[in-house]
Image (cartoon, rainbow, N blue to C red; front, side, top):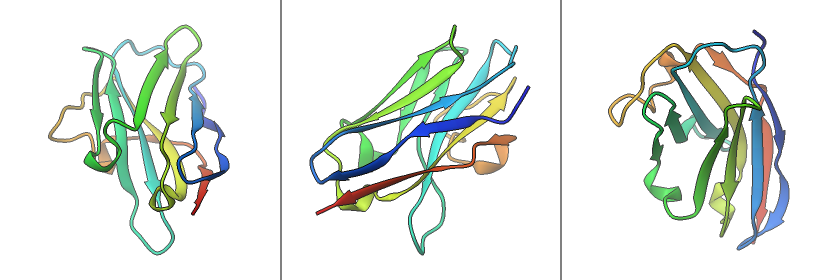
Length: 128
């Protein structure tokens, strides 16, 4: 299996929408935790949203609830994050991460140490 590869992102004005995608190639695990993190300039990396495929349960950071939506295409090994009503404070580098064969729930999905595979990141810039 290879590293996750992000695509999408870009620049948009506040109130606009963007979608970022992450492709996981060669993974054969049936249960996995797939997540998006982001790192804004001068800030620590933080969890944005995650999906545990074993139960199809989704988790979202409070600041993005109702605006961001995960979708998972198992056949295409792709995780997408649709971002609507974007705000300047959403500006960051967005990273996808995977814990293959792992488990995540509301208590641990933000813990970066459970994710063994990370993408290279894709920039999202929201202007006011």
